[in-house]
Each structure stands twice: as structure tokens, then as C-alpha cells.
Length: 359
Image 1 (tube, rainbow, N blue to C red):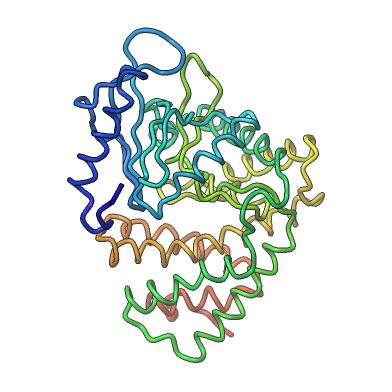
Image 2: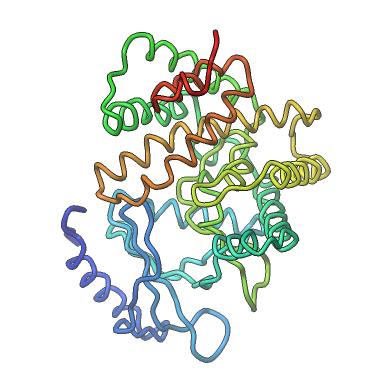
């Protein structure tokens, strides 16, 4: 099948998707004319819900059609879904796929998102409900990590870590702020990046989802009540054990106070130790590793969200830049080797004199 470029897929690809679904309509009782948008994300992937019959159950039901134009990772999605399912994590089941075309039909895990439930719980002050959801997610993460095997997923290595953080000077400092990355700034960034890479690589390595956050988690319903349903895992790698833990709590779309964060981090640390995962025996060192890992991710996101705006035209991602600057500053201020980076953030925001740094 010859496909259009990703610059012109909106209507053409929708027609191709409907035609592809029609070819599978009889087997899954599909009704392609019921196709409606289900969600979208920061990539070129799109998701549609349509009437269909899941592998189990009777009566009215829905399935999800995925439009992921190459080079989006349909094949990787299917492979990692099998790994997650084998680990006892609740994920969509791939029913049909054309990997070359970038189409999949998968089971529908529902519409009750962790993000909505946690946002509501936070607004209502119902921390018990929030804690229950977070602990379910952390238990699922531990099951996934326990299934880890080296050589199965791509390594989250030095070059990968560095490439991610380079998005910040290119897209946040250079493009978004219009600031030149001078020699002094470059040297500071290089020192900071080297510290964070060394910390990440020194940690125990395991299966890592990379986007384990409330937006990608669903509250499961019958016939599979196991929480959460996990989505958006096609970029999974083999990397630092703290990455997904900090991603869950220090998220793009909602923030928690330090007491709640610490409760969740301590819960994970205790459960992971008990399960036999190689987390650091000292909680203080585990927490430092986790914070430095989170800073690496937040540096990446500062650049990534700017790239999504300027390259892909999705401006709403810029609204969350202050949240990530706040995450990054808080961690960098806490640790002496990173305080130069904290000062850089304040310089970039024109806040150095107001904050009152003295060196």
C-alpha cells in the first residue's frame, strides 16, 4: 500500500483506515461508520473508537482503531504489549494489524482515565482515593520490572540520555527563548548532563516504559478489574529503575505536594525491595537517584514541548512549561553539584537577582 506523507494524512489516511477496517468488519462485527476520535497525543498517532465485538463478552461493545503513520511504532507496540501482558499488566490486545501501513485494531480499555480521577480526587482533597490509584499503578510497575531481561528492549544508554537532554538548548533556550547558548552556558550544560547521565547509568537497569504517567493510565472495568490499564508503551526501553516511578508522580499535567510524593515513593521502595528488585538499600540514596532521574526527564521535556509547538503546531503543550521549570529548579537547588543549573534556569527567566543567588 502506498501511503501519503505525514504532512497530508488527515483525510486521506482516515479513508484508508476505514477501508482497512471494512476488510475486518465481519470477523469483529465492526461498524466503520461509527468511527469517532478517541484521543490523540504529541506524536502523529491518532486513536478512534468504533462499534465492534471484543474477543470476550456479549452485547454492545467498542474497539479502538489506531492510525500510526510510519515511522510510528506499531510493530513495537504489539511486541511490548505481549511482554506487558505476560508480566500481568493490563494492556490492549492487538486484534488485527498492518504494520507497514500503520494501522491496528485493538481492544478498548475504556474511558475512565487516571488523570481525570486523580485530578478530581486532588480537587476534593480525597487523598485516600488518590493513594489507592497510585499504589495500584506502582504495583503494576513492579510486576513489569520483575519481568525484565537484558537484550530484549533497546538500551537507554549514554547517547540516548544525552540526545534527549539536547532538546533543551536547541528548542527551549534557542528557539523558544531566542537566547544564544554561549560557551559558559554550554560548559554548564555539559557538566550537568554528564552528572545526570552518570547517575542514571549507575542505577540498576530494568524494563522501562518511558511514558508511565496518569494520562496514559485507565481505570479498568469488568471483565478485567486489574488496575491500571496501560497505554502508550511503544517506546519502552531497558533503563534506570527509578525512571517510571518519578514519571508517575512528577507529571506534565498534575503536581503533588511533597508529603504525598514521599508516601508514594516510600511505598514503591518498600514493595520493590520485598519483591526482590535491586533498588538501593538506603532510601536517601534511592531518593537522590530518583530526583536526578526526574531532572533528566524534565530537561528533555522543556525542549520537547517547545519542539512540539514550533515543529508540529501543538501550542497547548507550552502551557505546562512552568510546571517543568518548577520541578527542575526544586531538584537542582537541593543538590550542591546541580545548583549552577538552578542558577541558569533563573537567569533564563530573568529571575537571578530576585531569587538572590550568591556564589
